[in-house]
Image 1: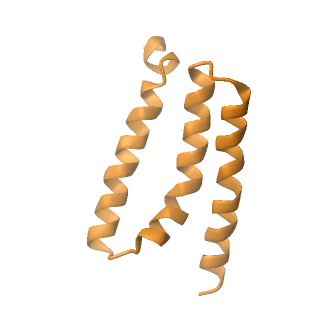
Image 2: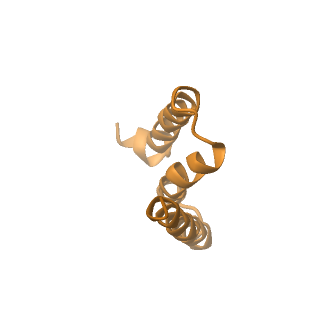
Length: 83
């Protein structure tokens, strides 16, 4: 089981589940792709950063993934609060 996490496959599984969920929400709730990007984007970026850390990627890739989540989160907050 530790190899499953160390290889990053656990994060891959979570990302696949999130993709299925996003597809389901896109179809059933008729959410726009932009709204889905803002809802799922920050989490996906954080998960990509976690995956990079698990597989031993260079720190710059981890920092880039984590930094990319913040503007998406702020845009999502602005979208939600403006309604």
